[in-house]
Image: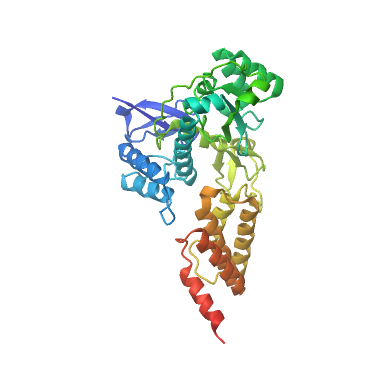
Length: 410
């Protein structure tokens, strides 16, 4: 027999039961509410095999290829998964079909492959001689960084604290001294500090290369011999040896680190206006707004007209615009077009990451549709042409042909 791991739909706490209890109802041992134990997840082997193939294909993605997220979503459904069958709340962090989970699992596995490749290239005898050290630095900003006051769970442990612990536990006194004197997280390539950084915490991915933790914006770069000597990390006559490296296994679709990471992501309470971990946010029975458990306990009254939360990045703006356009035919109503324009403009202010080129194209398409609905056809044509350039499969060729034909009329 094996165990089934799932989350209580009421208190969102992780529970583990013997699979003999699959399908029965029991009181949650944490909150006491009745919960259904989900069935055995028989769909997982097929999904993870598809995930492995999709990740490998994504590493060599060509223009015109379908987005890996779409392929993975189809594979999950084809394997027989359904949120209702799995006894999970649709759209929650444990739902395998959620946009955020699909993106996080795919991006993490791809980044691991890239990190392994870079580590291999930097671990030859020649590379180690010329660049004998690594340095961990912040490559991408995060809404909530590890170690910040807003961080929850294991993410309360910041990278500086992790680095000091790694140096102390592995006995790398020089790396620790450099960090304490300069604030730079550097270590020799033959030091075990990097592996400890990637293995010692619940959100660690077990890697001796990037990424070392789930959802991190930290990356490593090589340090040349002259800089390593100048900063005191090595002596001029030191010989640094390459390390043995093993590739990381696939991060599976059901990985509990992914679920915990998503449960702890901040989400706005539409009653008090504060951001709380997603685990503490529920739908208000009275107004269907997102409400935190603190407001629920206080008996918070429903806002008469709660303002929509401000989007935090380009992807959220794009998702909001997609919801506005969903199910509508062109031309859309003026108020809808104006809202879509505002959301798309805000998305472009944030800027899309290079690997979200398809969403960048989708935003240009929606901006074109909004402009066309408002009668600004020349501007709409320009947006459609930009969208097509960014993604040939964005679906605007007929609109471009129609507008060009209309423009050509005397």
